[in-house]
Image (cartoon, rainbow, N blue to C red; front, side, top):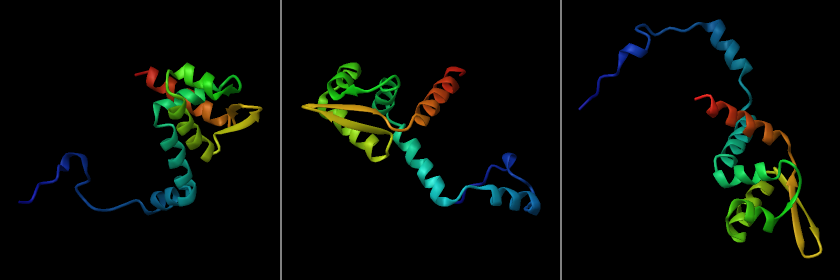
Length: 122
């Protein structure tokens, strides 16, 4: 059984504006750069990771502090921190038996805050 395509939202004639298409293709970021961007958006597609990043906005926190801020277990927070560390969004330092995390890349805060503003407009 074949389905009819909805033609109300597509062109009735197949053609394209060669100059416009070529200009857009030339301006398109490289595949590798888009893959990196996808990783960024994947990382911030998780509520816990967003909360961790926002918690670290004003400075470093130990893992226990982050756990209490989020109301999550130490193991759950540690797992998310490992993901963020692997993406180089956070860094850590040891101080005796304590481990403190801070943001390694402040740009991620701007991206999240812009996203919050965007959804707030809806």
